[in-house]
Amino acid sequence: MSMGSALHENRADESPLMPGSLTQNPPSYLHILATELWLACWTLCSRRQLRRLSLVCKRFRDICLPLLFQQQTIEAGGWWYHLNRYNWVEPLRKLHRAALRLDALADSPHVGSVHSWKFAVVDSLPSEHEATNARLLKVFSATLSLYHNLRSLHLEGLVIDAPFRQTFSELSRLENLALHTCNIVTRNGFVMSLRSFARVRAIFVTSLLRLASPSVAEVREFDRIP
Image 1 (spheres, one colour):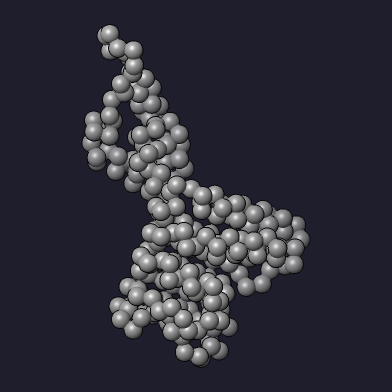
Image 2 (tube, one colour; image 1 turned 90 degrees about the vertical axis):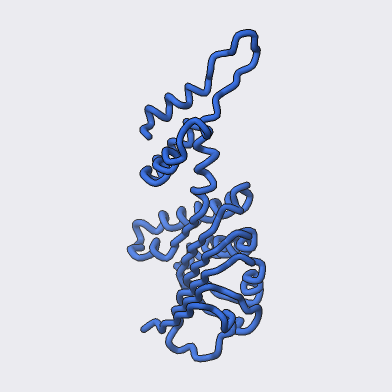
């Protein structure tokens, strides 16, 4: 569906008044248009096109917004690969925007639509970024339990302490968990019934980890080579 046709559909909502009626009765496009057409819009458009389309077509907005919220990703680790004295401000801005995004998402009526989260950070940062990075981590840790329909969780570079681990017990629908070089300081605690569990661990960690139930269908563990 092109932007022109979407605009045409939006204007079509302004249907003429029926004789003798003082109110407008816009047609139900959800039932007029075939389901395959809505699906084609969703599968063939880029995320940017979907956002633009949702601005001009209220019906499509109502349909696609929950789908746009299903997968959430913040990969802060990649922001530091080419850091130097000339571009150090940009990663700071990204950290700040990411923290604001987490705040907004937690207050959104679509928080229950989130099914997948990938959240990646780095272990150590320059001193001028530490405070903003700490705020990002704090907001994510404090709001993770709100995603009550979360099915898949991928974490990188986090410290899994007792309060954070307790949050796992509130994610009752979680099926897939991946921990990539996370510092799991609380080795014992709530044991999760998962479909799959994957962990990339530091090679020097040898203590036993009790996190996933022995009944987990798929368990993968790898050692990171320093």
